[in-house]
Length: 387
Image (cartoon, rainbow, N blue to C red; front, top):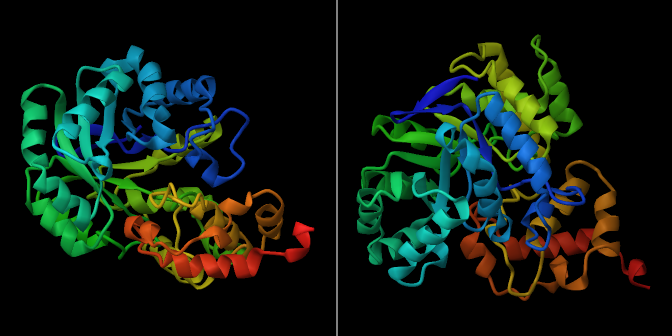
């Protein structure tokens, strides 16, 4: 395993994201992991994590709300025997904070869940302009100071979903150890983007990359994109192209992968053996640029499946609707129509949207969700299936 510094802390270049852990009964759809009713397969998760540790992965990333709150509990149980060999990062759900006392309440609960007296990294989760201002108004920065001085947290950072200008404002506001940004070859100029990556590095802030495969979409590319990637002299699988592109940036400390199977863990560890900065050739980078253009032409809804829009107050399963729509429109997969009509409950379908707009306020991608949901239903609904 290769290691880099996240500021001054050595971390494995492959980080283990705990947002898409394996589930009892299997994971058939990318959105399964966002269903809090589904139970994490603890035995398989333990196999995956113990294999990752054995082969040098030391950075584990969780959050309060992953898997309906179960992710931290399972992670804490599995990592406890390995605590001196691993780095645990989790996130304060600032979007759930209503008053100052909530900061300590959430942190103490997360320490209990993760079975550790001290977190290595504690991040403000999914900051945008709105949550940043509300958190500041409740004195989140003095809270972080107290959490560090009291020994409950070693290092602090933030994960981010908003514009470059907001990113720079947050980066300048505190002595952060690290930040976590969405960065992949489709999103090079999106949100913080490349300029934000370089800005963080210029300020001595370490960077962890999330969504390097864009919710798995860069691992399951359409045929036109796959042909472009296969035109390289150096043969690589689509997932390797995505990860290698992120690792190619020297400013990146670790790249997080939300792995759901042992095969994925093993494969990504193999990919990481070659993940040195500036290791892609000029021809490689040209192929990626062509693949990006081809992919952009195909994608109908720019949804990563992060599920920050959830839960919907009307029970619409927004990520699933967009996933099925993209499968039909981008990948020409007809099963999306069948699943929408035969397996989704009426209240989960796009047609159940009441146009409240709450989801759009929470969407990191700033997707016009209400408008797109109307297109989803018009495309996928088949009246005959109801009879």
